[in-house]
Length: 66
Image (cartoon, rainbow, N blue to C red; front, side):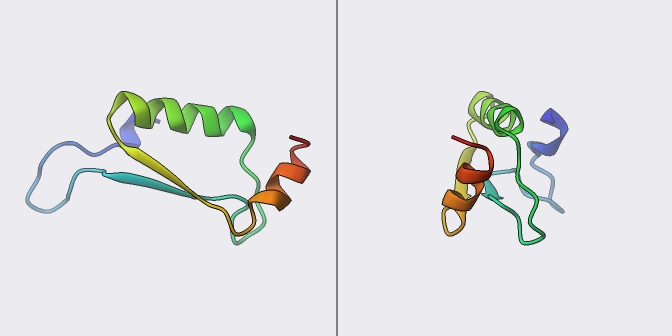
């Protein structure tokens, strides 16, 4: 997952500054808690902020039983 963080300072691409997560996605996929934790840890180690769209968050929480 570390490969998802861009930090090459290239002229043709910018570095990653934010990871935005929809939970569940528009297609109805729900990310498991372990995947969310992994995303957060990679972001934290690389100084990248994480934003989770909360519009459908309670549906995901109910599905994951948390």
